[in-house]
Image (tube, rainbow, N blue to C red; front, side, top):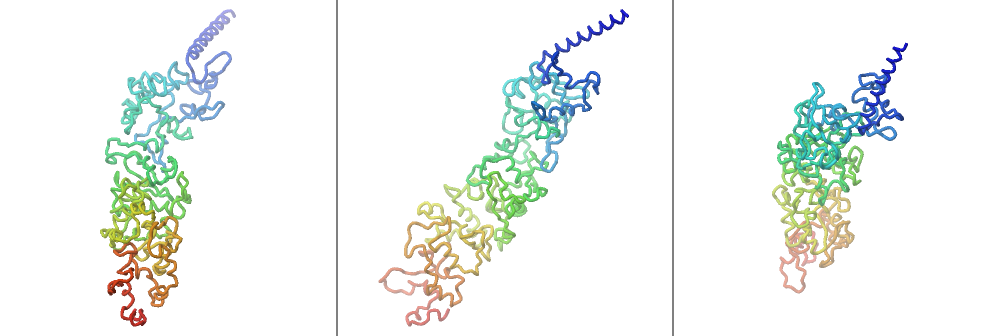
Length: 581
């Protein structure tokens, strides 16, 4: 009996000494899981001495990363931070396609972390990182004592093997060697040196709210963080790299009225499996499964678009610019502004700009403003209504130079009518911003024409309702009187100076000329019998000479305008001046 008592005492002593040794080892470290004391049972949170199911005596059927995630799911009191496995398995684009530029990979928690803590490193990061589990290959020693600056994730000055974000990415033993071209800090893709910055601000331990998705530390900074500066990864896709697009939303006209968000970008952009490879992708607003992918990097840039490519992209723009907006959301951007219905139940497809009439095969929405479409990038332009080119205009105030944009085609080169020359005549509607600044007037090409509705058959739109086509059969008298009735539409301002009866011509209704033209069957073009629409060499946009001064020697040419309809000889003899008309 005594022999057994001695053995029992020896076992107890060994156990106690061993326990003291364990306590001392754990207590010397700042364990994130708590330290063992006589008053706590911190070890039992993970381990079971008699019922452990695997080698470390883990008290759970879950193993590996799954066991860690039983606690690290954002629950508990206090809540344990939710994390995801460092992997790219579930780093997907909007279509569910893997979005990583490197091959698929997955790390275990214990490759980087010591669950019992570390004397100095933050987040219980080990000295020696396990780059490869089988056969085991380590790298280090890693020093991570700060979030930013010296000894941070990648401080740019410490030995590469001591920087947690670099030591694995540059190690060729890493399975698939996935991130050799993206080592971090100074070697970060793009123009910015992120050395000494907080890497997990853009690469958090979980890219989404679900900790069970394997996407820890993948990029999740959002569109704005990266696209606020030019990017060129050096592979020439696209040539010259990506421009800084975020700043374009601050130009004179832009899509988003308010603070730009990542969700705003996703209204138009897809990047289905092509993010960062140079191929721009645009998605249909009503059916995101319809994707428009550049045939080559940079092909969708407005300066590179052909008329045919621009037309092929028009359904993309019209999928949002229709009656129901983006799948029923008529205000899809964060600013809350409603989209304009350009499609108009097929009205755009019949418009001259869409069909090209007899000039060409027509245009789409996006382009360079001359050879393809009218609108530059959807981000912003220095001209009104996102017109192209976005960064230039004909005058000091590019926004007001919309007529200069129209002249690009309507100067007799592409469009058959030389409207620019007409507006350059002595008497004309003051569409030029310089003239408007001088006389206080306000009128634009779009005051009479809707570029998304007008056609050769019906070139005018109702000045009181610009998306309503003015049918030619309605006559031009009522059209002109929309403005010249003494109460012009909003946005139309007449010059402060005028001559004769002024700008109010409403008294014309019921006059002899009005009723006479009606009787003669020529009422459809009342005003045009005497006036040009855009400009004339004679005052008041008159078609021909009409002398207004009194007591001048008579010459038949002085009233050539009148003899367009009237017969001079019949006037003298008091016969019906319309007899031969």
